[in-house]
Length: 70
Image 1 (tube, helix red, strand yellow):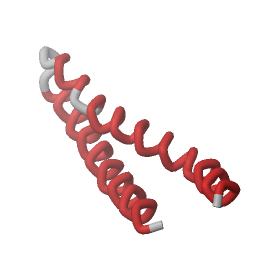
Image 2 (cartoon, helix red, strand yellow):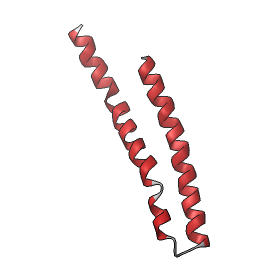
Image 3 (cartoon, rainbow, N blue to C red):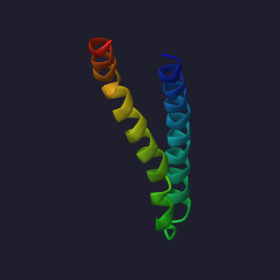
């Protein structure tokens, strides 16, 4: 379960980075409407969050399968 704890901590850190990029994007778009590319900045942490979230979603099923095999 040490790996599970690590992935959860990583997920928490990435969620904070995601929130910071969303706030940064909101501020940047209100200051300069011409910088539309800034709206794509939060997508990278969002995709990482999706990946870690799906992994954590399937952790209980993987643990049950491993327990059945043992």
